[in-house]
Length: 345
Figure 1 (tube, helix red, strand yellow):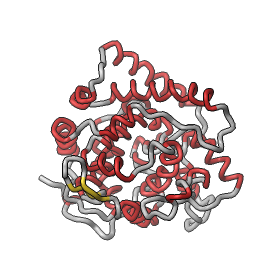
Figure 2 (cartoon, rainbow, N blue to C red):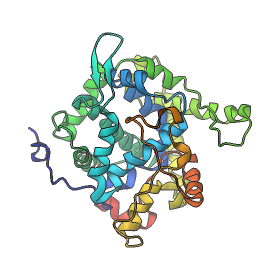
Figure 3 (cartoon, one colour):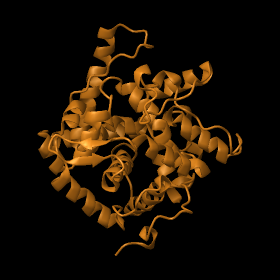
C-alpha cells in the first residue's frame, strides 16, 4: 500500500532542512570514496548509460564535470526555499538528452523511471556511506532517510509514479533493478577504467599526477566491488572475498575515527556551508547561492549547450576555497555542533 505522501506530486512540497538526516549525510566528503560505485551503478541502467555514451564528456574532463555538477545537485537538498528552482534547473539540463541506443531502444533523460533511478542511487549513496564510513544507521534512520528522499525528489517536479511507497518497497525495487535491469554498458566499462586527466590549472608534471591518481581510482574500484550488491558484482565480474570484507570494514572504521577531527570547513560542501549560515542568521536568507568555481566550467566548445551548467566568474578568494574543497571531492555533513540534534531528529 502506498503512503499518503506518494498520492501525487505536491506543488506545495517543502524542502529539506537542517534537522534532516539528509542534510547531515548527503554531501559528506566520504561519499567521494564511492565515486566509482555511483558512476558505475548509474550507468548500468541501460537508458542512463546510453545517454552518457552519446552526450557526456565525462572522460574528457572528469574532475571538472563532477565538481561543477555537485553544486546544483547539492542545491536540491540545501537551497531551502530555492530548492525547487534548483531542481527545475537540473531538469532543464536534461531536456535535450535523448536518442536511440545501440540496441534500438529509445531513451530520454527525463523519462520518469530513468530520472528516478539516478535519484535512487544518490539516496543509496547516503545509505552506503553512512553504513561503511560514518558508524552505521539504525532501521529507524533508514526509514527516515527514505521519507526524506521522497521529499527531496519532489523538488524536481517529476512524476512520482516510479517512487516506491515505503522503505521495504524501495528495498524490493533496488534488489529487482540490480538483478533484472542493470547491464554492463560501455559507459560502465569507461568508469571502471577511467583515467583522470590533469586539469590545465594544476601546476604538476603529468607523470606525477598520474602516479597520484592511479592508486586512488584503483582503491575506489575495490570499494565499489565491496559495496555493490552481489548480483551487480557478479555482472561486473568482480571478485570479493571474506577477507576483503573484513578489510573494508576495518578501513571504514578508521575513516570514521579520523573524521572526528576533520574541520567542518573541509567536511562541508560550499553549498551546505552557505545553507547553514543562512539558517543560523549569519548571512541573509536571500543571499546569492554558491556556484561552482569558474575553472570547472565545461570546455569552450560546449558552454552554450543547454545540457551544461556553466558556473559564473567568481572572486579569487571563493575560487581558492572551492578548489580546496574540490580536492576532497564531494562534501556536506552538518556542523559538529549540530550532530547530536540531527541524529535525534
